[in-house]
Length: 339
Image (cartoon, rainbow, N blue to C red; front, side, top):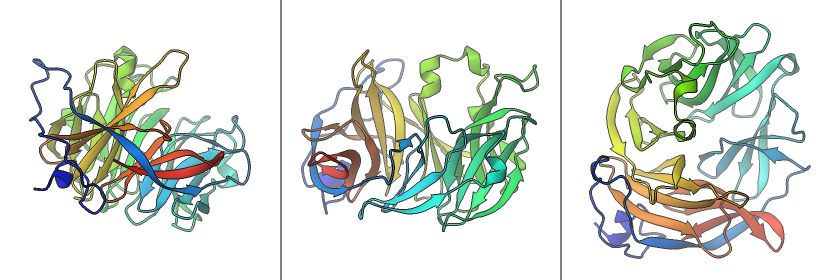
């Protein structure tokens, strides 16, 4: 195995040796693991100018040269259109606009894009408490809706779609739902029509949502793997889940330092990339990225944004490196970076 392949990046772009990797230690004996850090350098940039002052929010999803994110021209909008941007051209290609009938009385929760480019939004009817799934074709046109078989006022935190069209959903019953269920989390597989297929019992939290460490709650992210499995970041581990809802394996994810928390997961060609953030009071948070072998969890490399890069890391590709939102000649741009 070449040094570049060990670092989680193909020899086509990454050609430097990052040193020997260590096996993931026991979480009880060694909660944090130091590693040689390499600064990323900007390699190319593409200008990007939204057609109006736009606000964007997580999650940012990537498929090839396409970047998806919820965007709006108003901070008060509760139903957000999702944009699809071609990052190689810096152009908006598609807008997945929620139909007018869902603009009033509904609240946007999250969204997911299938391997074939079909988009699904999870929304909540604020009057009835029902959670619905709105589906869109790859050209942005609205196609259908389905009610999710969950208790009223269920909040979908994470949604992902397998190539089988089965859905992974993680969430909890929010205020307004059945009193005995409020705060209760659910991690499960659902059918395309919104019916419960299987709860993933190994990942069901015993505590209610309001009794979990708030920092732990934020340490979540999902990414669909090229192997057909889902990779679910939850605190210090990544759970690998099959389309049928089986827990395939767990990967231990070591933090660089105690203050860093994992906030984003990407998958590319057998490598898992995790972005860690260090909150800084009244300052811009600092970030680090680590890559891990998706089969063994072995730590492969650690990267920091170098000169000319921001902390707005969007995507990871084993062939092309990291994609950032940054500046070029004073203008907003998509910036690709490698060591």
